[in-house]
Length: 118
View 1 (tube, rainbow, N blue to C red):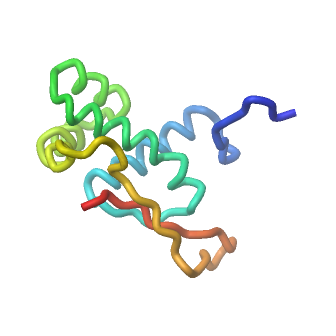
View 2: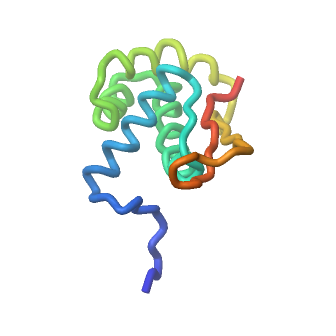
């Protein structure tokens, strides 16, 4: 039974799932747009929104919390100095998922574009 199971597992262990989320979040912060499967985009969106909220706070504690999630100083620096200040006047909804019309050639998976708003 799948009672109270909310997250997608993607047929991976917890460590592999965390690595997938970190990788997608890093790519989104650095490139500001990522093409991935629809389910992966839906899974990583709350993580990225939480990171941008930490970036908006801008204090040392928030920076350390962000470094726990994304252990790459260059990415966290870009998040706090370039990405988060753009969303100062916005109360959430920093990312958007756009479904793409075509499917992936190999497995027929629905594709989506995960991008930062504005």
